[in-house]
Image (cartoon, rainbow, N blue to C red; front, side, top):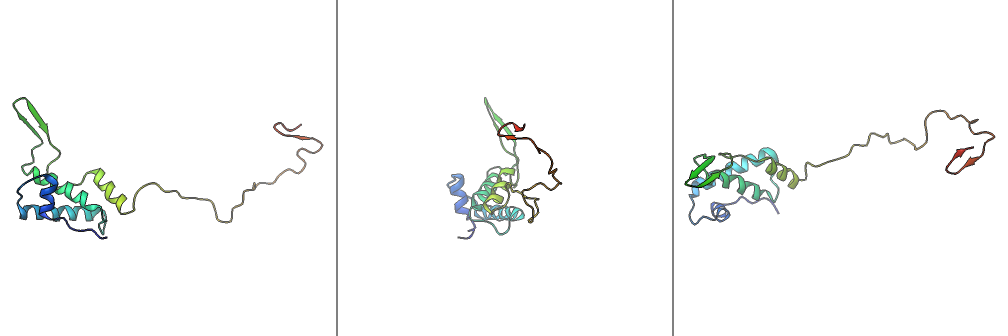
Amino acid sequence: MAFTVPTAEDLALYLGLEEISGGRADLLIQQAINLCMAVVTPLPDGATAVVMSSAGRAYVNPSGATYETIGPMSVQRPQAGLYLTKAEKTALKSMAGRGGAFTVDPTPADANPWVTWPLDDAYGAGLEYEEGWGWV
């Protein structure tokens, strides 16, 4: 299944709005898709959630208000504008199969588990090897 572009109606449903400005919503959705494509291309299946989140933030706060107080109630809003959070970028990379930890093994392919320095064949000569104690 490939990424499907969300519609203005999808954004209205996501935001819980009865009415939505279709042209503005389409513009914000397209710009959010462009931002997401700057992180991963092509967009993975689950990228719709990130696109809707980014476009929704920009749609509900067109004036860019970051803090609002009405009487005893105060509301602090996220940063204004169209942007991707660090978590959204990480989610996009994860959905695309990128990111995360990996291991690099520097051991040569022809390495063996034995010591590489010369051993003293005379070491332990005349002594008895006792388990747990070594040469005694």
